[in-house]
Image 1 (cartoon, rainbow, N blue to C red):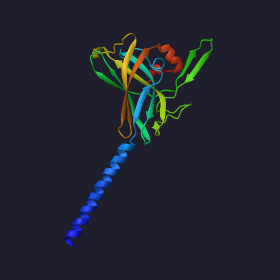
Image 2: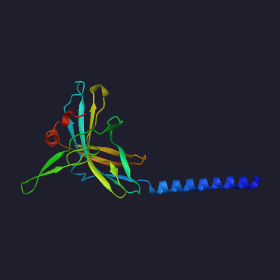
Image 3: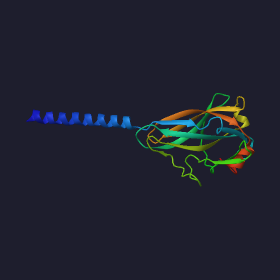
Amino acid sequence: MANLEKLLQLSALVLSLVNGIALLYQFARDRPILKAEPIHPDLYQWWFHLPPIAADGTPAKRYGFLVYVGVSNRGLRKVSLTSWRLIIKTKRGRQVELIANSIPEPKFSFSLADGSIYTKVLQVLGTAGEFGKGSTDIDPGCSIAGVAYYTAEFRPDDHDDIVPSNERIAATLAITGVYGRRARTPIVFHKTDLAWVKAAVSGIEVIR
């Protein structure tokens, strides 16, 4: 009888281990797989100078960054994004991690070859607006797209700055999902005028 009881206990232990391994395999098989890519990288990724005054009124070199990105889920489980941060390297070799700011939906106007004006409204990633719900939930086999806005500033006593190359700034966009899965994509920002951006997003120069 004692041997039978031990055998039953061992069988229960083995069964628990098998079930655990099966659940772990299923979780790994069905996990979300994120992929992030800039949308029209030669057209929609911009950087621009902001007024050189920090929030406390002291002088600072300030930059704004607008990125239009698509994020897809190639896994078998629905996922929600928890963060989308921009990583920029300074001239001193520091990696600065920027958190996205909430902005109204940008409305950009483009002049077409026939002289007409085309206006495109872009949804903002994670922020509800007039045209988008701002959801960051991604079903399996689906994708979302949106704009994210970042700002960076450097005080004179920092002795640091961002150094554009041919009026371009290279950065990395880091996306994180609720299950901890991550995706990174390089972004190359092209310089544009603040006045043009303000026409699309009123008051963007004071958003922090």
